[in-house]
Amino acid sequence: MSIPSGWSFLLPEFWVAGLIGLLLMLDLKRHDRARHRTLGAITALGLLPLLPILLWQGSLGAQELLGGMYRIDPLSTLFKGIFALTALLVVLMTRELVHTLEQNHSEFYLLLL
Image (cartoon, rainbow, N blue to C red; front, side, top):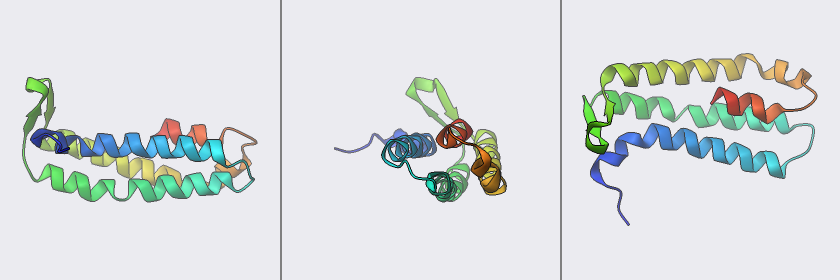
């Protein structure tokens, strides 16, 4: 099964959706005290590959998908990169803050994504 030619431009969105799914599955499996550190590390490591993907996507110029309903251009890619970098910085800066929460560690990372 092959991906249609224009769908590769939705790779950042699919990547974040997959990362959210992974965090949800890990949250269901792990119930120990170090869970928040694991979820934070996976979120940070999952956001790192998104930045080169966005750099590649921004260098290709404007593209339209789904009959012109979805447009990807350098400006939208720039803002996706800013949001991804900001999310990465927030995850790194709030490592100890999440530790003080008694529960709902995963919701913090899921809402951030």
